[in-house]
Image 1: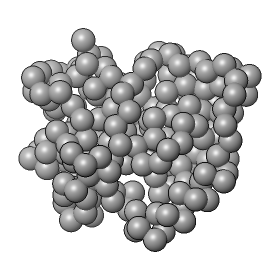
Image 2: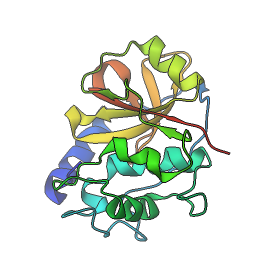
Image 3: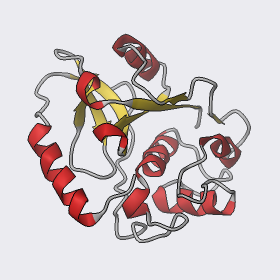
Image 4: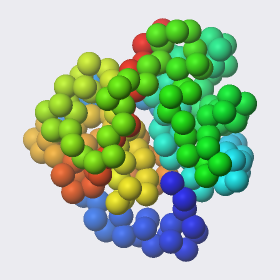
Length: 195
């Protein structure tokens, strides 16, 4: 969410110390592009009052999922954090504090291509690991809330030998995995069907 540059550096350094290198066999049911929220092309774009670089981790994670599922904006514009941000700004997709209204996202495409399901919001890590794995295998978009609730990442799979290790596309940090039991504090789930 918000990255104050001093705090951002401290959190990054601390996260790098905590992160372990995943050395086992990855189980990656679906592949998604990696978009960084601080990319020069869109990082300085305002969401409402703050930039994508500062607070756009959930929106950037969502853009990776849309792009990876072949879902375009209005069936024509490819999705990345810049184009999704523009669409959300034009379609009341944020509240006044830069929070993303997930329920607006289904309007981005043909009906049924994107669904914000009834079980889409989990403010705690109340999903069993086996449920997360099953959802990933079924193609559900799993966005994990990590770093004590201050950051979101797109979960892409898990390590076969140590299933607690979740592989991710992290829009803000140079990390590719987090611990299910130690790092995840909540979830956002979308159902997407593109191509």
